[in-house]
Length: 497
Ligand code: BES
Ligand code: MN
Ligand code: ZN
Image (cartoon, rainbow, N blue to C red; front, side, top):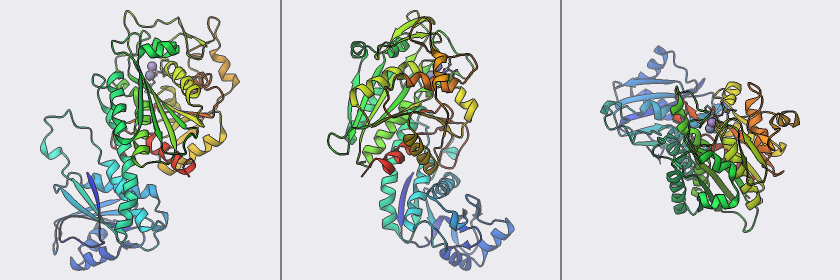
């Protein structure tokens, strides 16, 4: 769906959405329309006990005295409480409510409400952004979907007093949405379509945006000594890849910010195989890398003034005659050896080499990794927050703040020597699991910490947030694209001049 901006005026006919502020009611154009329709809007609001609470909607079909097929009332809540996020949510609600209204076009009137704390252009840009984000759909494999279930809405026009400023502000946000959509696309794709090689091709496509992309194959990784990563991939018929993406929008030679993603394109668990039920979910075990790819697209798309490197470790974790066994000892690029006691704790193994490689190669200002690392983080935090682990309070605080501003929230959990000793091992330098049933997500994090070499680092465990089974205001069910908005905001707020 396309977002357009136009003068603050009522169209003659078609599908119309009107904003209502809680406590203050219709805005100026809404009041004008109410008058024209002989008070139809006010009567409907009264009859429907409609007060304009945030995202509350009321639909009037073919209201008498007007030419409209449909008028949708949508609540902005209390005008004083409107924020970027509530504006996005409002846009998402309108997009979802009108998606199947029948018309290819609709107009949403954002006319002057008293008491609005956001500038009109910011308000309108964020409403458009939310609408765009919510309109995402992954339906390329549905060849027989009934027509009446397909979305009809192709274009949503936002009518606002500041339409040209709004359009300009939306332009930047649209690039972030493009990044989110790319993430959602690659995460949604089935695992027979997206595997290390094909996912690396999606990365290569970013060269069109000015991103420099380098793809390392098995041979090159072997040469670098990435035994931990290669061990995970060795049971698969699909060879692994390590992709390095660079966006140099900042000062020449300045140390980059680094983002590292877990890209297990399918996680069967390997020889420590997972139960069959729900295993299909493990196609999205590459969501961390998906987020890094989408983030790079967003940053390059909006020409961020920062040097950023994105590294994604791409493997498929399969059981096979050649697969790694529980008990195998692998040597990581860092030189540290790992006893692999559970082949299903594979994310940390590939990240061990990706993190080590990233800090050694780029000497970054910080590293943030994203990974669907543990089922235990879903037990801890459900689907509401991603887990945050960090060796640096400043980075941690900045990430947390960016989370609150974008709605992609984080909750910090501890690291520490007491946890770290749980992965000490008699056979090798460490084992890849801790004590059964204990602090599973923290154990994953302290394992990764052994490969960051004192660079400021944060690990985001996104196993609970990468995929959603119910529609949200700006995130339709399916791949959420979690991480793109969060990390784009981190970069924008703290690392661009
Ligand atoms: N990819 C999984 C974690 C996961 C689980 C992500 C559910 C999304 C939803 C990861 O590779 C894994 O299997 N982790 C194990 C670790 C354990 C063996 C120490 C887990 O969480 O059970
Ligand atoms: Mn696993
Ligand atoms: Zn996994």
